[in-house]
Structures are given as structure tokens and as C-alpha cells.
Length: 137
Image (tube, rainbow, N blue to C red):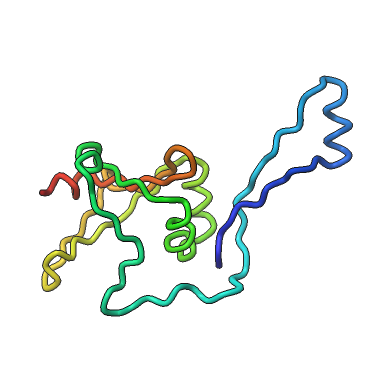
């Protein structure tokens, strides 16, 4: 299932009445929802399965965090995660992850510890914390 944001632009009558006495202004809110896919998930090419391609900059390596765009995360990551996992990240929490180093395809290396995580970043971006993997060098 695909995840997206549902924006609430108009208050209900009850919310309008509740806001009148203290003259508070209605705040537009958004909620993460799960919707049925109208189109099938993007097809993965078995010869080149990596949908998100990013060249790590020196800043990415120094900070140990790889910034991912909103579209890429929602299209290629959240689509395959449960709603609970996505909500956990969108709420601002870290979700600890596993990274596989496939540089040598015959003997992949698995990384999983407190320095490898996925979290929400600034301005609808997301960060993959990869300090141990990025500093492996």
C-alpha cells in the first residue's frame, strides 16, 4: 500500500465553535494515511535493482547521514513498510535499520547497530544515519 499525507484545510463546525471563545486561528494539519495503489509498484530491474541512486558527498561522509528526498522515500521505501513503521519515522523517531555492503557480491557485509538508522530530517527530507558504514572507507 502507498503512504501519503492527508491535509485538513477546513475545520468542522465543532472545531469552529470551540475556537470562537479564545479566538484561536485554525491550523492546517496533515496526517499520514495509507491508500490503495492505483498503479503497480515500480518494476525493479534485476540487473540494476537500486531505485535510489545517490553519490555520497564529503559532507554526507563527515556527518554520517545521507539525505533522501521526500518523493524517493515515499515511492521506494515507505511503500514496502508497514504503516506503524512509517508513522514512527514521520513522528520524528529513529527507526534502526540494517545496511548490506554489496561491494563484494560474493561476501556481503551486514551492518546493524545504533549508528545505522532512518529518521525524519528538515523540510520533508529523510536521513539515513550510516556512521559506521560511511566511515568504513
